[in-house]
Length: 258
Image (tube, rainbow, N blue to C red; front, side, top):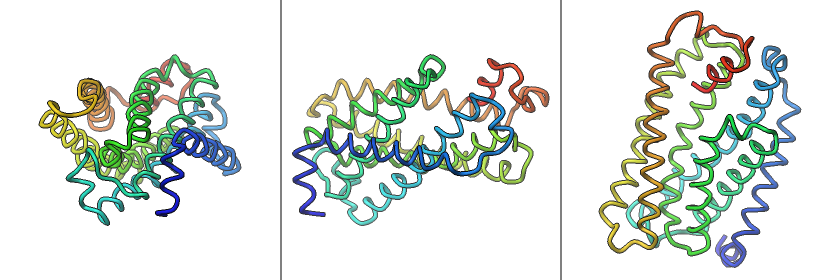
């Protein structure tokens, strides 16, 4: 791994591109897996299912990877500015490649307008991660940011269960509580930690203004998503709303994004 690091650092753009292509191959391979009938019958649900399948692979991989990096090298948690290891640098390369691939999938399949929030999030993440890769600064910060992928696993599972109209199952009921816990601990907790770090070190940070602005935008988005999550899973509007099967395209998309 030590021998690989100079290669990655000298060609971060190529490393990201290779990672993006690998995730595209994963996307193609996952299409061979069986899909619930209710998902196959709706074009939007079918695309969303395939998109989420790749996202689930990324979340399982990078969430575990980020936790492992911090467990093996605790300094990652303390020095977000300068510290990184070959494994953590490679993690950021791999994750950036996924976000590039996912943004491309959203745009090229014609779902950009309906997924503009995800594209905004992806643009912010890609810029921050690329800055870390090219300057070799804040790589540890990017690793900590990937703690949110632990919550993304339960978020993706939640939406895939909704896509397959399985909201009444015990798995969905259990997952909504696990999802709430991981959202608070790994998503809100991570954002609070990173925001606190930026505020405390803003005066000397490279590109401090940009990172602070980006973090505030992400904080607002995450709090809005948290409100939507609580409202949809714990205070549903009505049984008829919760049981929609996507007959009307606009309502179906809104229902599946909650």
